[in-house]
Length: 190
Image (spheres, helix red, strand yellow):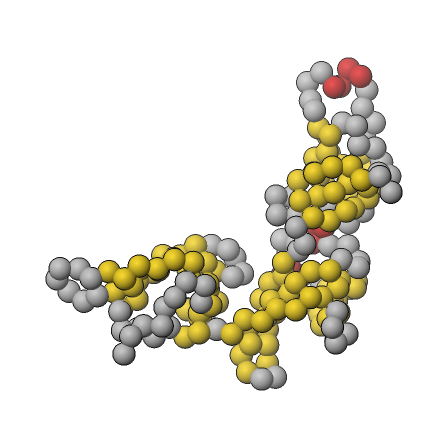
């Protein structure tokens, strides 16, 4: 029996879900053959290096994803609607803590689920769109003398997030944001 390890496979390991991002079959001169792997934790993003016996069969994890629209927040619970079948789901803030900065009502994003059985799936993580457009709720006015030593200032967005923006951005303007780098891209004229 051979191992089922391959690149891109989602597996269950130590009660968590990982994606195999790299692997190498190793046949040492002495001892047993093994597979050296690099695993990426789907929730934390951490990379783990792990060796499996060459005959080890990893437990595959079925991962599915769907497009959802963010509806609203009620305390620590966030509500989303499937854009195809209109089913609504709720997700605890703990699961999406890294993405709440730019989460605005109406934004469409992808939610990934770990399918445990036909009627049991658990939300693993969500993937924001690469860019979002948000309104600057507040930013300080810049005096001419302040522009000598700095090229950016802090703004507060409509979602409550703080973001560094260029000095020429004013309160009430719309800006495009890179959600991965959490950085300003450009001003948007509406």
